Length: 280
Image (cartoon, rainbow, N blue to C red):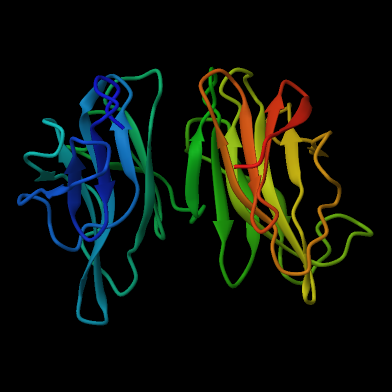
């Protein structure tokens, strides 16, 4: 959504689209590549500047990571991937995050590592060679960066305390070992949201599968991932045979929103307590 005009919406779906009537009609940008897919990231300092990370495939082997940038709200797009890998047998780009306090600074997560730009994507430098999965965002005050990884080898929550240069997995499941003694089950981390008001805080959505049954608690850390606790107030452990937690997001005022698919419950987490609001 455009911060200047709530009726203006932007979308990425095999191209870039703009709506000026709250989604009743859409126009496609002719300068955006038709294969453009991925997350749309708005610049925190200029809402007309946006970024999209996508992967361009040539046949079945070569994959080229691309970062497309617009500075005029989608009218014109420019490819900026200098310094990123220029195509190997597996070079997908996972996503981008923009630094909330440093203009022009973004991080990109690729299968070959984490890359940083300080000039809105014109040049990229690799910080780490670790595949951390999808970047989940910056801390509200410190140089802490979060990531979530889910692949065939392991599922994990990643943490970097130095702006993306070095990483550690602070909540993980190797798909073989029990991530928490006595719990059993196989874990999966669909989403993580940094606390927008408290430094070193974050919330992670967790799927734990026991055969056909899923439980989906939301875990909270207040010490940058050194320890985790299940949030108070949500149904615990949310037993559902088929459906489970569906969405996790936060608003600038610090409220965490959690929705549960199938039951149509929406929960708002304020500080360390939760309250149930009317189903939507």
